[in-house]
Amino acid sequence: METFDTSDMSNALNDVSNRKTNMNAEAAAVAREKGWVEPQGYDYSKYNASVPQQKAPESTEATDLPNVEEPEWAANAAKYEWSEEFGDVGPPNPALEKMLFHNEFTNRAGLKFETLREIKVTAESREQPKPVKSFSDAGLHPIMLENIRLCGYRTPTPIQAYSIPAVLTGHDLIAVAQTGSGKTAAFLIPVLSKLMGKAKKLAAPRPNVANGFNPHVDAVRAEPLVLIVAPTRELSTQIFDEARRLCYRSMLRPCVVYGGAPVREQREELQKGCDVLIGTPGRLLDFMDKPHILSLQRVKYTIIDEADELLQSDWETEFTKIMSGGDTNEDADHRYMMFSATFNKECRELARKYLADDHVRIRIGRAGSSHLNVEQQIIYSEENKKKQCLYDLLISMPPSRTLVFVNNKTQADFLDDYLFNMGLPSTSIHSDRTQREREDALRAFRTAKSPILVATGVSARGLDIKNVMHVINFDLPSRNYGGIDEYIHRIGRTARIGNEGLATSFYNHEKDSDIAPDLVKILIECKQNVPEFLEDAKPADGVVTFDDDTDNEGEEQHDESHETTAANIESSAAAEEPANWDAGAAAAW
Ligand SMILES: Nc1ncnc2c1ncn2[C@@H]1O[C@H](COP(=O)(O)OP(=O)(O)OP(=O)(O)O)[C@@H](O)[C@H]1O
Ligand SMILES: [Mg+2]
Image (cartoon, rainbow, N blue to C red; front, side, top):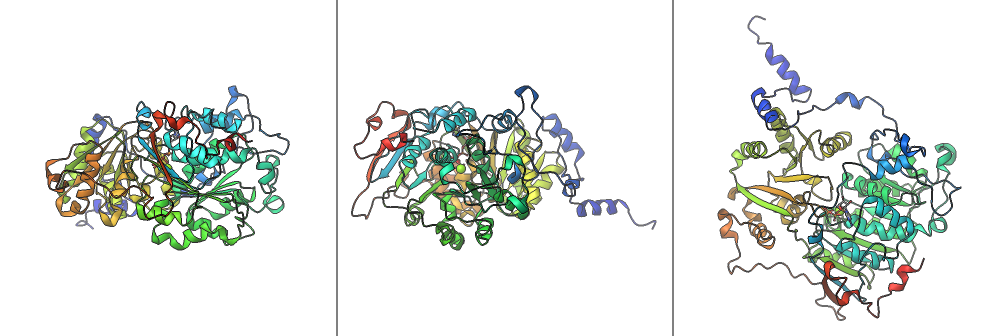
């Protein structure tokens, strides 16, 4: 016993109990001095605690608003619960309103919002969409207009200006617009608005949840009118949050289903009635296999977010089943919509197989482009120096919400431990984590308890987190990891909706040369500095060309193509009503 060094025992225990007490005291002191908050270990006791489902607060006076805790699972977040006694519009619920719309962690339009409106818009279709100039002129339901106001959206973004009339006039849609440009609202606003006035007629019968819910007596089958599919769990819950806001005071009841969280609670939500169903493909198909719980026979709108990802062959079986509405949907008037920031020509061609001939195609800028609000810098670093480089970079800059991308899960764990032990407030997220850990990590990042999040590609698409000021590609996404499209999505986690942000990528010739030519093209297109070590990857003739951006080729009947910018809408001929565009339908409630 005398010879055995017992300090090893406690170190070994740290390993077993999941790390994080090997903190380097000196480094931690430097991190504090630089202003980074104290790192916080993961609270494993939470696993055993049972947190009740979040209930929609009873209507209370605005002066007496309860403090509402986060729900245990994102799927259980409170929503507006309709009561049979309500007329066409439900009364306000100030406590819920505060929870939905006055959340300090929601992104707000930044100073460069106007620059989004200067990007070239291409609209191709048999009939030309007439973009809307403002939300109030768009023929939207009054409750939708009120919810848009509560969200703080003052002007439609270009994709919204085009998608609203296209959907209101009953067209299928492929919409491609840059990251952080409001695509979620671009599909939710017109679809929900169109259903708001008709929900009583179209929706399936449901229990009066306001009087309490007993699953044994009150449960109904979910028969949504809208189905929204997204590739990741966190993205689905985020779309659900936006749907909760935009459905406020309406009869439309949104639900979300996704893997990793308990089926029972998600099932119970469905059994209370569901008009708008958001989900990831796996869990969705599980429920579709139980027709007494979920039927898609009433679905009028199927929306695929991040469609180019879901059109990939790995998702083929799931995708085909979902697009066929589980074989029960016979509605001839069923509309399909696909959205993404990246949508290469091959994907667009695939997508068109699912859409009606008179569908509308809208592209804001080049499909797969980034916008100028992200400053992109590339730093040369040999593989074995990247860790130090990351530390130096973080410590040399003012503390800010920073998202660090790596290419695999082991690397994510390793880097998170490293940063944590250097006294930096990091956490991590990847697909091997339990859903509880994933939701907690994201919440800690969102609320800046852990302002550094180390993530794999699972978090590259769609996530909208306020004030992510810096995205770091610790590993660049080489072709095997999604290539340049993945790069565009990753850097798009910063500089959203007219805000600005920085994206730094570590590059070395050994690992990253396959992405170099595409990366250089993006840097040139976005007017960024091309570092000397990437000179060789520049196009030989100095001219940057991308894949052909038009979809018209090879067709007998060319669709009409129309180009403008949203900023021009007010003054240009685009504002004049094209003869064959059925604008009247938009105001036909
Ligand atoms: N018209 C608007 N005015 C102000 N803010 C808006 C408007 N429309 C949407 N937003 C906000 O902009 C942010 C980004 O929107 P969203 O997440 O829908 O972008 P996106 O285009 O889907 O991006 P990504 O390609 O990364 O998925 C959100 O916080 C949303 O609330
Ligand atoms: Mg999105």
